[in-house]
Length: 333
Image (cartoon, rainbow, N blue to C red; front, top):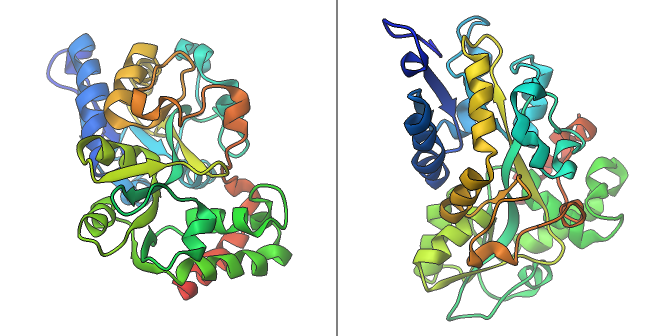
């Protein structure tokens, strides 16, 4: 049971069960955020790299016995979790570090901070073989004769790129208008012509570049920059027009440790914690006073205006159109 107690009282007997994205994200989160909180408070933070199973595990649990106290939720998981009543409403008075979070993220349509706090995120970028090419953009990924790699599990990010390429409407507005989906699908088909690796695995993308199977791939900036930092053969570029996602962390409905969970959220938003997290995880951070390492400092947004120029999906608006986009993506790839 999430939040079980030990035999005595005090914060040192509290265990927080926290579910996050899998892979290197979980490793960096545990190394920086969880261990730092444990050292400061005595609370044990159990990090589960549950990834794509977070929501289904919450949905399958009984209301008074959730498997986690705190969970990560991108735009989709936030939308679905709120609709299913899986998260507690956020009590901002318990998270004073929200004061220094970019206002755009706190007011972001379809996410915001009613049920959680924005903490970090990634942009859609291109990882490429530094010896084979000097850079890339989305148009080049359509026109190239080289083999490429692409997200192959979750439809929305490739479709965001296709919408940006279609130019039928500003940004990714095409996704919200069924009459414009044919233009999006046409651009997606042009991208798919060169794709040799469809995958949800960062390791498969980077191994594909290393082995010469592909020369470049659409991938997520945090994971791509983390790889580039240790692999001189891989470089990363963020196209001028791009999209991304934001993680909100939410306390789970039914947890015994809602207040401790909110203290944990507040800790996550400290500028020094965000800075250290950025230095190891390479995601962009929500606290406007956080510092990003040199590898990402110029690539990531550093103002509300710059955040506003990035395209994020509003699943409240997308609604039933998801099935059309998802089905066509599966057909195209």
